[in-house]
Image 1 (cartoon, one colour):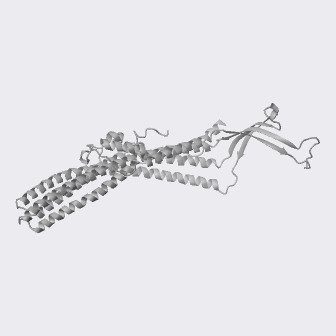
Image 2 (image 1 turned 60 degrees about the vertical axis):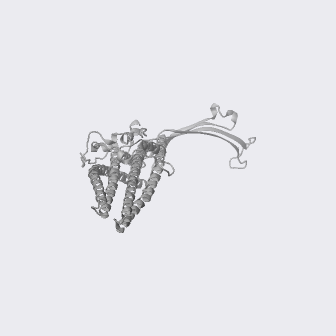
Image 3 (image 1 turned 120 degrees about the vertical axis):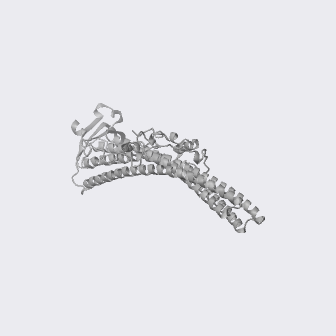
Length: 460
């Protein structure tokens, strides 16, 4: 009996063998991992830290994920409870009358009306010979763990989205500053051109060009204002707030960047990323459901019992002669169900195959995301270095063009061309700086960072 109860039908779970790369394609330090850092160590901007704390407390998607974990934990409790006996109690009272002219005559002097009192308990306990209930509990436990990993995935994505949107805001602030400074510079140039035009030294064509450049620079600002407001609204939503302004502390150019990115060993990614663990737990659950489906082909044995008291007289209800009981097994054997059990087993096996494919896909996607993020950060750093050199050179060129124009050695068209190139280069540098910060966040997310310190509590 003990040996039978100890067995469980269906395959025991074994982690699938998935080929993993030994090293990263993009050179990276394998001593430790960027994901080992807590997000407050990675992000040194106190305003960003404050926003992240607010998002982790109030974000609706994260709260929804937490509620799903609570639901899965309750479902595990339901599955576990089926492995234990159920005991119900009840009682009742009936007033009866039998027919005086029925097939069984009522003896003379016997009252055809009588009372009936009962108090009883009912016992039911399924003997889990084939492991159906244990496989169901195993599946429910895996689904709970998968739900908890899904919560961590939401948390990681939330940290990434808040940081990305914040850096986008800083980049837009920087663009707004550059555009406002450019507008002020072009207004000053227009003032000089107007003076020359009034003195008869500057042609009207230069005047109109200068006016056009002022208008062009001024037209950029309203669009930047719109983009800033929309980014603030998106960030407010991530924080679980109504749309509104968002405080910023450090400027884009003041955000620290690590000189190198430690990525750790590729094999460690399976343990770091919550989406990979979520996919694996989904596979564990699907695997356990096969055993549950196979158990349906075998007899279901349930031990049932009744114990209590019955009496026609309330005064005698709890006396020794009023006791009743019965105890015995009930066996249910599937004989014919038009192939329902076999179809159910086939469906669970197909779901297990789907879960395996999703697990393999998730692993491949994870490694691609890490490689993409590493190469993006590396190349953004190289582009930024070149663009900083370009901005410095074009800044000097624009200054020289203005001096030459003031001294009558250059046309105003040369000044405009130099100013436009400097303006475009400054905007490109700002976008590259933002891209580098965004790539850093993507590396952190792809390596599985962002959830450890904020998700200490585990469903386990």
